[in-house]
Image (cartoon, rainbow, N blue to C red; front, side):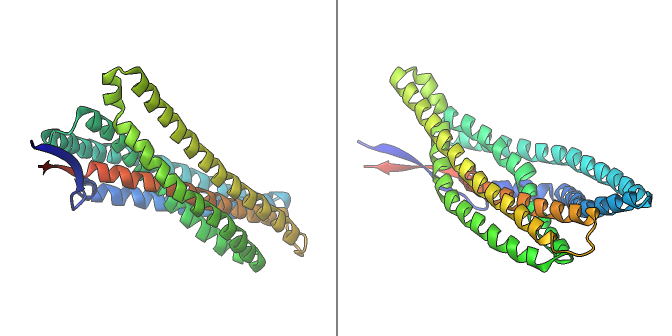
Length: 298
């Protein structure tokens, strides 16, 4: 008696890239605006520090420059967000429509297709929000290091040492988080089937597993966040100690330095937190791009 075993096989090229390629002009526009927004953000501490120093000396010309800069920054940021939403909504619509039709034609269960349509939104949300955040963090960290070099080279050395410790802890935790997210996605795909079954024990077991994996994921995020917070406070303490040795430093310069240290710390905090999310979304993409084949088992 023959039976069939259904399994998923990745299909190349991934269909997500087809959807992205169709929107390549819009994506180039939104990333150009995003780059401009981040460059302007890097100038903010320096310009505001100059405005503070100028105001303390009775000059408000620097304040005028800062106000003009702030207006340009707000306009660029707002335009980028409006453009983002329209672009990624079109990508989501194209990706999910194709995936639903293709996998239902291959007799993939409604439970799995429903879960994958929800997971697809998380994938697009990552591209719209988290991926630009990672790019912004890298640009911010690089810009902050360049700016801090003009104030005190020792700050850069301290940044490198303390941040390396925090990043190592986060990479270690990220490996566990990837495995947790795979198990969570497996449960999500079975949710509709569990609800349809109406079995009390099966339903309770399903949601207990969901709760357990979400708690573990949250605990790992707390560990990652806590380690980078310790690094951030250490950076602030060292910066204040080094600043006490500077001669002729004014409040505006001190503000700019502390702001750049904060920007670097925030960037270093964001990137490790995105690594588990990236691992989860790689698993989601595998499910969305998969083909279903039946293997006869004689």
